Length: 124
Image (cartoon, rainbow, N blue to C red):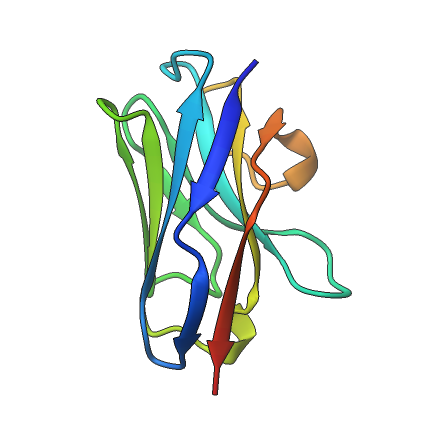
């Protein structure tokens, strides 16, 4: 079992920045891929970014590419998502997820473990 705890959400004005963090416990993540997803009210959960724990390969949704950076800290077992130039349409609950396989996955249904989510609200 892997436990994931997100932090760093909040209220920010359009154009601002937030850094979300996800701390994992319970297993070593050397064979895992970590993802960030988001879900706005009335919408399906959507892929934001992912990173392979070994090698550090990354992938981003077109909607956040160029504005967001996903990274990992091996020593702290933490994955972070730095989001810049935030827009009102970025408002959603953001979830951290883990997949026990070392490749990039884009579907939320493909991930094995989930955090509880953290709210990000961007005001215009």
